[in-house]
Length: 229
Image 1 (tube, rainbow, N blue to C red):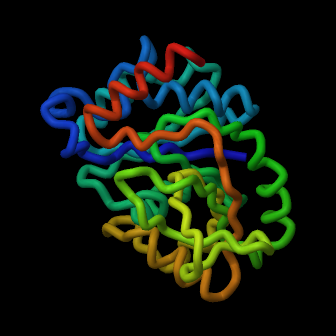
Image 2 (cartoon, rainbow, N blue to C red):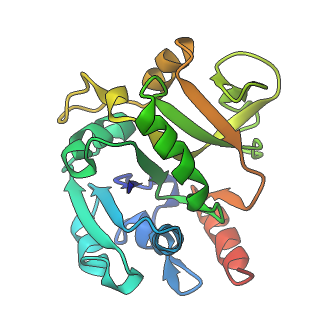
């Protein structure tokens, strides 16, 4: 299975830190933020990884090169201007292949075991009626209303009690992105909601370490947490 790390964001809320350094390369206890994902993906046996980029993207390529330092094989999908999540994935589809693939937001810090997603990828490959599988987490203080509901049958829904937050970790079938232009911005949310309405999105809850590194304050938290891992 291949994976994609989303790294095209400008990081506006983290300026001035991101004025001269792309957010994925910000240091977290001696390792770039994105490097923590690369380590965990490699540990799970997922070594073919695509990284999209826009803002200061060449710095990402120069820092990570082909992925040798992390025992992975990296390919890059340059966007020029960021294409949003679905647009960026659609642009990278030729690099991701025809099988289900994992996508991870480059600006989250977590200890999720990516190996947990491998059986779901195999099941999705056998039965393409499932278009997505999402990892959900408890709602952080900065996002108290959550995004989706995890039903008792393991499916994700838009409405209901006990809403959870989408972690930015998802498994997707390429068919989810049919019709999405590879050169225009497109959001992921509408695709997921449409697939949920058809009962084609499953989910799981993750209660381990997870942090959205969206501000300089949360970057400092990630740095403190990293030294305990």
